[in-house]
Image (tube, rainbow, N blue to C red; front, top):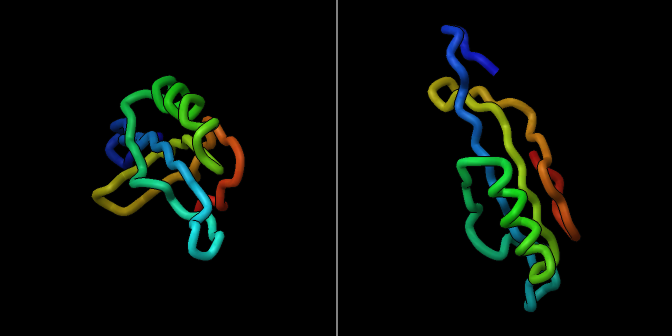
Length: 86
């Protein structure tokens, strides 16, 4: 995606892992989201994390942080219980 000046917009690539909380059984992030430089690395790390968590998702979206414009998230990898992306 290009911004109004014709430049490529940054593309955050993120992995999130989820576990069920012991206290109430609610699905929660197991740790802070991790950002990666490439989709391949995010997918690789998500596959490695999948057996150890209730859910894992890696996703990317086009972004223009200066204006707050963000594209729709594109799922790269999903496994297990993952809440909807907003």
